[in-house]
Image (cartoon, rainbow, N blue to C red):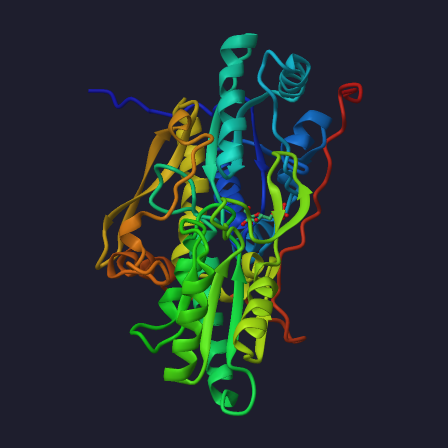
Length: 426
Ligand code: F6P
């Protein structure tokens, strides 16, 4: 009997990877997962400069020019190594020219797989592009790759990026509370930490992991899922200060008043029409001072929280890498319009796996905190929330530090591919 030699045919064409929306401490770990998995299969990878805009402008980066070590270093480097953007493609009917341009760019560079790494708006873009193949007669497979600190993507159990911001928030809440507690007798009585999370309170909830029990910080968490009740808030601050001596409050930037308006809008909007948020902490602090007379400090970690790679969750960093690798596997298996999602198979010990989910079930949906995760008074998290959140902040994966005392983050060449087309005139 003769032995048959099986050789796997090298897939033909290139893979385009793009980062989208607000970046995270671990989005580059996903990029590393994509690039390393594609390299292992002999598939060349281009990265779009600044997300979908790079694809439209034909600004493509040849990741093949990067060393193995540089790609590996992406696993511990925050920010978006290839640039990200907030840009929403209109429907095919409303702006056909943009889709035609994308197909022209894909065709010119033999792009056969497009991997779009982002949140729910980006899943929408990925879905639209995935439909292009049929509509415009070009063989392109599109995979959405999950990412968002907000943890509000549907279907997936959690979103890469969230575990790390959750860990940063829980640790910072604990540390700042130790500080406040030390001087409360003669100085600050109320500390207010404002965290991200436009419409969902997942990050604020993670602060609850800092302590357990009525007197442990944070004493009050304010979620976008519960309208702000000024009287109840002030009563709880007062009671906590009188009982404990001080009070830590964690507020989500997306906190709404009873009329459904953001307590703190900066007044600007992004390309998706989202309000720029930020500033709920000083509003609350002023209220505490005016109504209760307590000395306060407030903090707005803003980008510090979503870029804090030095304090990343190992679980999160591993999941971020795994979804990148899985996206390549799915693409090479011929899948289209899907996203690798994280499926939790056990809370304790924490176990998870990755499955493919249709983008149509993820695009333009937002997963809020379930009511069962909020305490009855709406100011804290339940045991069920702790069971969900706890595993996501497990483990540390610090970056290597150099002699200068700073993390040694990746520096890429980001070598641009020669243009083949005329500039795109919108
Ligand atoms: O990507 C999500 C997010 O981090 C939100 O929590 C935050 O409101 C927003 O991004 C900030 O976006 P930008 O950096 O575009 O102002």
